[in-house]
Amino acid sequence: GDSVTQMEGPVTLSEEAFLTINCTYTATGYPSLFWYVQYPGEGLQLLLKATKADDKGSNKGFEATYRKETTSFHLEKGSVQVSDSAVYFCALSSTNAGKSTFGDGTTLTVKP
Amino acid sequence: GAGVSQSPRYKVAKRGQDVALRCDPISGHVSLFWYQQALGQGPEFLTYFQNEAQLDKSGLPSDRFFAERPEGSVSTLKIQRTQQEDSAVYLCASSLAVWGDEQYFGPGTRLTVT
Image 1 (cartoon, each protein chain N blue to C red):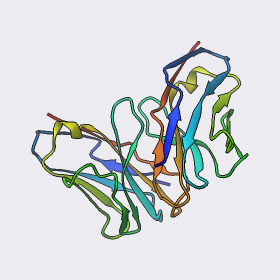
Image 2 (tube, rainbow over the protein chains, first blue to last red):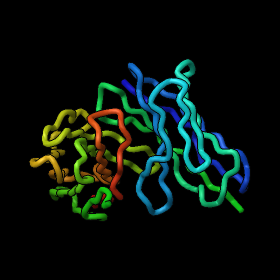
Image 3 (cartoon, rainbow over the protein chains, first blue to last red):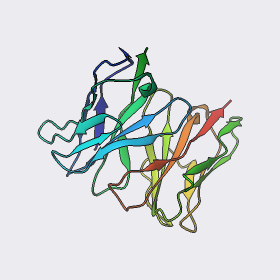
């Protein structure tokens, strides 16, 4: 079945540092890929998505590229801010199934 | 517009009690999902509705779990004879499309079984 493996956390960075959170997946067919973010005390919300190979999703300075050859969708940001502190979830949704499959989440803490 | 809402936000139940969790999706969203999220883990799929039809209930952990969406809008997740292992956050999400689209999540209901 489908699965998502995320880089284990927690991750602690200083403000303005470079961020990478690794995500790899296993799926049948050609899934859509997502990064969701959960800020403290809030619900899950979509950060970015990509629906086909080589697509790049981007939002709020975050980027991730759909790499079919390596089955990866790594999240990157060039300069993190304290306000980026949150839990980040990688997820996929197969084209023949409604549900999404999530990774276990990576907690990011950014210190000033 | 209004997002996905869930009620109650917190529920404490004694072991053996029945509970009902409600989800109000975004108006017009065809798809509705229920997930269970244990502490420190990602959401785990429970069940999926397309309008009023329950198309996938493969994630329901036992026959004590039951979900319905009778008019294709509001959904209720019912857990009978709650057990301690049912303690988790229950998330509802809705989506405009049938599949492969982004999901909009509610704030969740935190269920604690004592």
